[in-house]
Every structure is written in C-alpha cells, then in structure tokens.
Length: 75
Image (cartoon, rainbow, N blue to C red; front, side, top):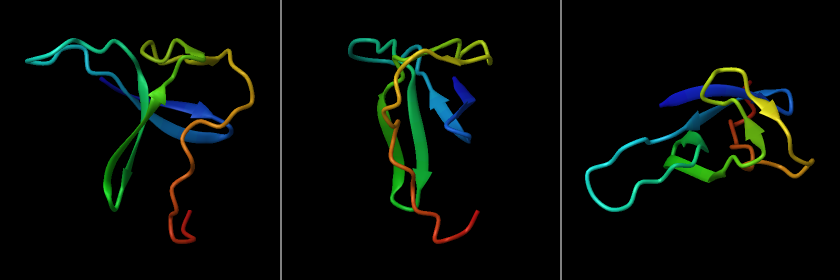
C-alpha cells in the first residue's frame, strides 16, 4: 500500500507491504524515496498514527525522518 503524508511542511511517501511470498511478514509502515540510485527505505514510522487511513497525525518529537534527497536545485 502506498500513501502520501505531510511532515515538516513537505509531502512524503509511505509504503507498507501487507503480504509477501516467503519469510516473516513485516507489519511496519516506512517512508520511501525514489532516487537516481533506486528505492530508499527509511526506518518504521513509529511516531505517526493514521497513515493508512489517509489522515496521519504526528505524535513524535522533532527528530528528522529520512534525510532529504538532493534534487539538483530543482523544486
């Protein structure tokens, strides 16, 4: 499942894989970025509630999420 969420005034992307073919299931929701080097996954978004419902609420501190990717000066 893919979702957008807002954090720190920026639109970010979250991913959750509910089922996979082999191994143990992972039940976390993680931020992801598509970069020129491929897909980057961040740590689990443990300080948010409601990401899958489309109305996330940040309940954590001020520490950063994934570092911002370089966009070559473009917005």
